[in-house]
Amino acid sequence: MKKMFWLAIVLLLSAAPVSAEIKEGTFSATVGGLGYLSDGQQHQKFGPGLTAKLGYDFTRHFGLEGSFDCILSKSTQHDSYWTSRYGFRLDAVFNILPDSRFVPYVSGGAGFIYIDDMPSIKDKFRTDLLLSVGGGARFFITDSFALRADLRPVITFGEGTFVNAEAMLGVSYYFGGTKKTATPVVCPAPRVIVQEEEAVPASVPTPVPLPVPVEEGPVSWEGTNNRVPAGKTMITSMKIEGNALVIKTAGRPVNFRPFSLSQPSRLVLDMSNTINGMGTNKIPVFRLGIATVRFGTHKNSLRVVLDAEQRELFPYRIEEIENGLKIVMTAPRK
Image (tube, rainbow, N blue to C red):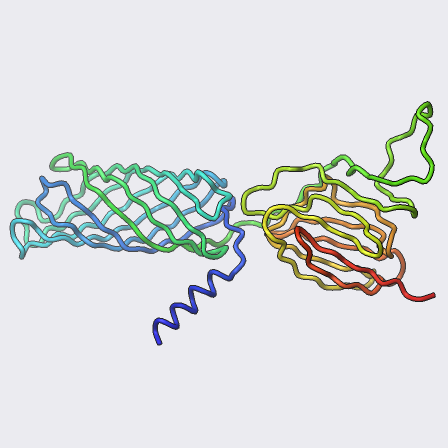
């Protein structure tokens, strides 16, 4: 029964959509287990322990993190002698791949460790300074939870200078931060490919056309960005095929949620983990009852809006195709 429960938890976490990235302005709370290996000169066995950490990411790459560690170990010379260690440390953290689901990092900092020998051989209580530089990695299982492991040497300065080793395995929870609002960017209009009935004489100069298709012939719009970020889906082009608007994508398979809104009438597609590669936030269409297609960036998704050309949008059907979506519009009979 317990195995089935944990299996269900793992499957649920694996099925959750993951944007997988370190975000600017977020807090993190970590709890985990420790393994502490003392310098041989201290005559202490390998000691287990617990850790609690609280961090803040100033940027996607850089953050600070405070740690509290509690470690209990036995003497190698007297089994009845126990030593408790309570460590407090502040680390600077540099995230190497902040946009990935797997985020390696390096960190380093300073603090102090409070040592309580039971019973005492010399001083029962003492406080040593410590320095630590190490590294590790996080693996996001949801947008907010990540598994974490790191390994680091811990150098203490007190009765002597000792080089110890610490390993940690735990789980981190990310929260807080401010939502980013999209800043309007003036981008060049996408390239329009139009099949004309009559060729334009070469001697007559023609102005650069706006992306408004004519009624005759197939029309397509090509994006301006060909680089798809790792782990993302990107809209690369759109075109009219018969009675359908085809939206082509690259990268990961598109994951979308459609719904309709009124006043004015429009169709909305929320595409998770998707970016706009068209180079503009608005494309005039004026075909198939669609006036414009608009793009808006939300927290972890791209919103695509099809505005109705008249009072009501035509009846539609959405089909998933290879590398994209096909929105079939059915014009009402006159």
